[in-house]
Every structure is written in C-alpha cells, then in structure tokens.
Image (cartoon, rainbow, N blue to C red; front, side, top):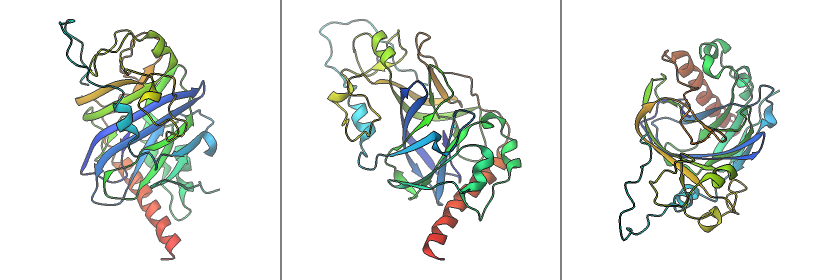
Length: 304
C-alpha cells in the first residue's frame, strides 16, 4: 500500500515480492522511487491474525541488496524472435508498554499490532482512536511503519515476514493513499513478483517477458531463481529452486489491494479490498501524527 504520512510529489517504479514461508507466515519485500517535500513515513496495513502481537512481524534488512528487484527482473529476458510466428501472445494485464523501533538498514521501522496500539509508538504523542474509527476497511489489520530517512530517490527494499490470517492466498499491499484521500481509481506503476510451488507445477514453458501463462495468470521466469538472484543476499526471501512469477500493473486501475489465490486456477486481481470513496481527512491527520512521532523520536535521541 502506498500510504504516506505526508503528501508526496511522486511515486513510481513500485516493486513487490511475496512468498509464503509456511502455512501461516508470508514474506514481503517492497521498493519504490519517490519524492517528498517533507520528512515522511510509509504505512503498510497487513492482514495479520486478529490476535497479533509485536512478534507477529519480523523485519528483514536488505540494505546490502539494493538491486534485489533488478535481479528478479533479469529472470524474464526477451528471447530472440522465433523463426516463424507462434501466434499472438497474450500480453501482461495493463492493469493500500512502547512499541519497539527497529533500525532496518536505511529505515526506522515498527510494527503496530492494531489501530489502538499507535499510541504506543511514543509516549509523547497519541493518535486519537476516533481518527481510525472512520476507516473500517483496516479496522482489524496490523501496520508496518517505515520512516523514510531521505526525501527522494529509490529506497533499498523494505522487507519483513508476518503472521497472516489468509489461507492459500498471498497479499500485496497496493491501495494508494498519497494525498489524504482514497480514490476509486489510481495510476499504477507496479510490478508484482511471487514464488509458489503450486504455480511452478501449473506453469507451461517460458515464451517471453510479456506472455502470461493461461494456467497461472502470471508470466513465469525463464529459469529458477538461483540462476538470476543472489540467494544469500536475499536473506531467506527467495527460494533458489523455484521459479519467479510476475505480473505488471500499468495505467489507471481500481484502487485495491491485490490478493493472489493460489489454488483456484488462473490468478485474477481480487476486488475484496476495494477502497471506499469517503474522505480520509481524519486518516491524514493520523498519518501526519506518525511522521511527527518519528521526528520527535529523532530529536529526543539527539537531546534537543
């Protein structure tokens, strides 16, 4: 979810990677290019178990692997033109006590188990619960909060694992909140990567970086991940002996999170998390509080 505490000038080239570590734990990595005029924080709502606690999320540093998504993309090379036509290929579909603050590479990160726990990020500031009560979509979600330590550029990937409530589904946080409001449609510039053994079993042969497999709904990588990804640097995110599956979302689309159902035939974008049309002015105030909260933390550490 591109959900920022303060307005952003621009967000582009967003990449996400997801894999189920086990039946209850999902891995997620997120990277984007952004520009902001003021210090900012990004918040990722997560469908954690309803009994979530601080250890429901484990942050993973990918500071030493800035080109993680570049390597994933290398798994989808453009093959030379065939000697004769194979027919028209289907193209990619053009298609949101105190808590511990973790130093995760270039980020200061915290996991907030529930809306009411936002007050625990810092005793100097409490985000009013009534601000969040007006946003029922994420009423029982947890939240991964990342303070961005620079105002522009491409971040190294943010990565973590979390205890998920979803069964046989993988969650991609893609809902946009950039200006304090949720719009029904938004401009997407997203590439989603996924690993899953069941998709490997269904997938046919590799044809091109834009040829969607009809049995999976994704483009499969040409080779298994070990051939193009630094498995050691990926800190356990990537399985060496599995393919990587990819889908691209480009252009203006409905403003939803993406949920990949793994055992229901070809992947289709989930519409279960359609963003509401209400104004998020109370949310904007709450998110601004998060940004202030991290700023206050830095000043306290410096003795200001």
